Length: 238
Image (cartoon, rainbow, N blue to C red; front, side, top):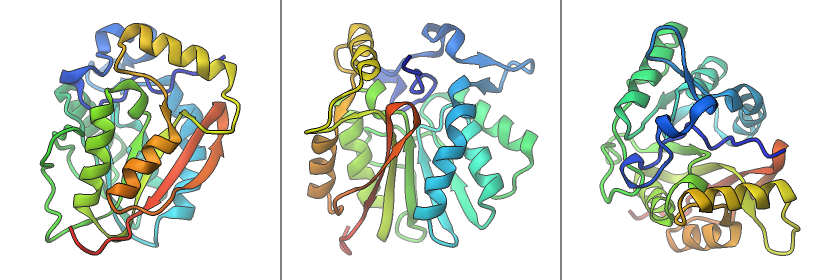
């Protein structure tokens, strides 16, 4: 059965990403009423951490787009203490959850969550003085309109240092590779909720990234029919 890992992420809430009220059992709150919990995080956080260890440098700044509950960034920060993490989300409730998880975990290498809409033309990031070494986005692309993916890729190109990486995780359709039945069913359920959502073609995302100055992606197959993608930014100009 397809695990709906995308539930609970926030890419551009005002423009079509699944709000908390419609997620039902998939995202719940802790007793403090602030911290949110997504069951999929416990399943996928260690496989994602493993690929991050291979793709990130010894240290650096990681901007996470659509941080959702905040559980991922806390886990990664705890295990990658030489990296600084900047979580973000357009949803105020999600940002409160992120900051509450960070405070509870007492991880010193996570900055306060910032308001960032992936589709926005300008991101609240000082790329001139402090460019990101990596932009990380987990389970957003399939639960947001295509404009969010376009904004994500173009925004990453604006804020990354040359040689930096755009790191994506989630389900994709690949040319020449049979799509799992669970992913086909998941895609149909997403499009039934909102015709602008859906599992994206990997080739379309790679083409968009290439036009923005990224190299072809490194691809790692992940559990539950997901992929981890790493696009290296190869253009020195912004």
